Length: 421
Picture (cartoon, helix red, strand yellow):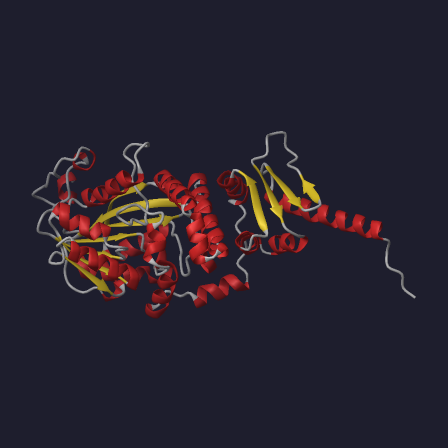
């Protein structure tokens, strides 16, 4: 006849197991100033510095899920409400990023399967984009600016409000490629149409803008009609690979992250077909200091098919086409500030988001926005703007005065390359 262990001994065994599991996670996190806790067990930070926050696990099974697969286990545990963070939420994520930035996770079976399942083919890109951008315009209106800009703002003054900074971003982009009245521009991935309409309204250019998000295109077309700009701006619900026609400039803000490394040569061909050897362009995109996969949790739950590239990889777009890179700017801290505004506004609308989309969705997006702030603050994510031009481009300005002082660009009679030789 078998006898079960006394309840006290079972409790001691469970306590020892819980402490062991917490100490294992502590070793994985390294010197992060965080306290870790289960309902009946706590693993305080062993360093003398003050703890930033306490990460609390609802039960042992949740903790085991994190130990088995840190990214998916933590992300889904937080989304399900089984993991809570008591203290400074963003700072807690920052210290986790800092301690794990040199320890990228191994690519498991799920990661390799996602690479295949989320391929950015013509049909795959449409599926991936709709899972994120077609959540409903009303959702994004809750926390974006008036122009519905879902990309990094530009803060000429650190104290600028979000609306000011987003308008400054639109001008920053337009000045960077020295737009002139009467020119033609093609935009790949136009969001809700804010940049295309801004270019037409304030710079007198004609724009053809492509996007595969139905919700965004419908919104952009209605804005153009309402503002009387339909004769200057055409919004096309189609993939960038189907761009046809000749233009003076090519612009893409926030789309390159969705293209995929394997399609960079194809994108370069599209750009060359659009602007030839005499045009110029700008790519604005989230990137990395070195190539590594996007967070598995982000790819699965938020941005299917996403990949933020390193600058080295982006040259695969330019080099085969003989495009000259004229300017590279990193706006990493501007994106951190942009995201701080977004999270602040999201939190103000949290009850409404939870009511309309459910508590899991609300927690998932809270984690995504807070984690993105941490990523840009710590430098695990970058925001690049790259300006480029074809070898026959004859309008390249002599200096940058036009960009920072608001002056009109001074044009040279000769190509820039001849001017400096």
